[in-house]
Length: 184
Image (cartoon, rainbow, N blue to C red):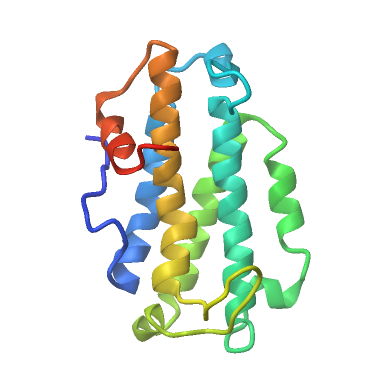
């Protein structure tokens, strides 16, 4: 069975968020099922992303959002970002490889985030950390990590549903994401 997340859209606790991280990876991988290489790179909508470009975007945002997360908490916790301000460079370089490598990176990245989040006190889920990057309010795991690592992927599953439908290969389970996010 395909792991469709029911509402509420956002995780409600640290444990719930940690449990959803691998499910986002599974949904993304399942969304690619049965697509040939040519279909992954096809652009059925002029000027819009292909499936492969959408995957790269999802993985890139996941890495970037994690950088924002580490920036927000680095005065409280030791993070990979506090060891090296260039920690994202090797991750982003991996995206230049094959689709399988990008998906492996996404899976590994979400697993690492789950392990890191599991080390934090559960009450930090709702804790306000400092304002960082382009955010205008204090950073909260319950809002920001939910959005950057889970909901962002689901939003683009709506995009992928449109792409798959245009390619003549819709997956019925993906319809729920287009209903949630009608204008991807």
